[in-house]
Amino acid sequence: MAQNHGVWKPKNSSNYYCSFSVAGKRFNKSTGCSNKQDAIAFSKRWKAAEIRNAAKAAEELVPGGDIVFLDAADKYLGSKSKGGRSSYREKDIDWLVDNIGPETLLSTISNAMIGRLVEKRRLMTRWGRQGSGLVAEGTVVNGVIRPASAIMNYAMTVLGVRLPSMPKWGLFHPQVFARKRELSFGEEVALVPAIGDYADLVRFMLRTGLRRGSALLRWRDVHMEENAIRVCVKGGKFHELRMTQAIRDILVRNRGLHPEFVFTYEAREEGVAIRRPITANGFAYRFRATTKKLRIEDLTIHDLRRTAGARMYRATGDIYAVSKFLGHANVAITQKHYVHITPTDVLTRMDQAEASYVAMLAKAVANHAVVAEDAEEEDEDEHLCLAD
Image (tube, rainbow, N blue to C red; front, side, top):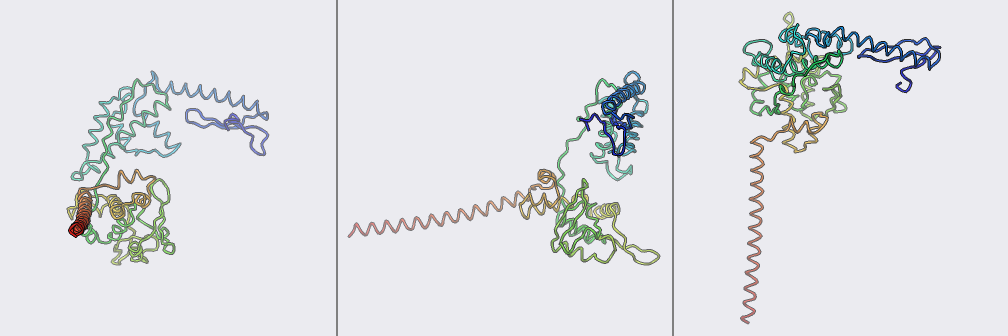
């Protein structure tokens, strides 16, 4: 369309239409012109007028080149409600407005202010409940740093706010180390029977490596005749996984319990036992309660996925198969987050190396003995010949 200057003639129309964007807003209508060159000229005049209007609106919005944080946040959320979903929760932005101050000018938001906000958020407890532990670093990043930077960048690039400088956002991102927590076999032996109706879901995740959301299967995702499971995963992509006999056994055990969902739990309704589908929140609550009761510390549901990947790698040594198994876009993700060499793994390799060393040394000693014996026999033969 660029080569046509945003001008075209629809079918069954005698006039040309035009379309263009200014300040993120789309404009289009009939030019009222039947001649293409006249239509192009009309489009250029109209676009120039809208550019002037946008510039004037920006000047009225930000007198002196500045704007208060509340206005910037409202404009940012308003643009997302029209043009697409915001990546950030509205309650997080409300928290920022309350703690930065609704009347605070963007030009006064400094590194020191952002640093204080980050530290305040880090000291808050999960869900605002005492005894639930402090919020995760990801919550701080997604609830403070990213939405604040998004609002200020929007103000500069779209609203035309002129700021002397921006906070150095990179200073506040924590140094992230790849998580290494896995479920040990001893913990698995304790966890599975203790978690009740959720046991098969735990077994399933340990054998498939699926994320919690994907593991909550519907029967439409299961294709027994093809020996395959197909689920929509992170990013809206589809992931296909073949079934081992253990996976098939889990699915067969749950067949017939619910018409739509694979994994269910028993509930009672008016004294009658019924099966209800396991939900993501329900699973999370039961998992936390059970691990707390068993005193299994620092274990999350996602660690089951990591455990599945790590166990497969230790059994096969095939990093590419593990990456495919987990549905990763590239093997680097698998190497960084799901495959870790523990001290026990190192000791196992050392024992293997030692066994290989001992075997090779024994073989060398045996060969040396044979060579020495042959040499001794040759010396004896030569001695007898000389004696004769």
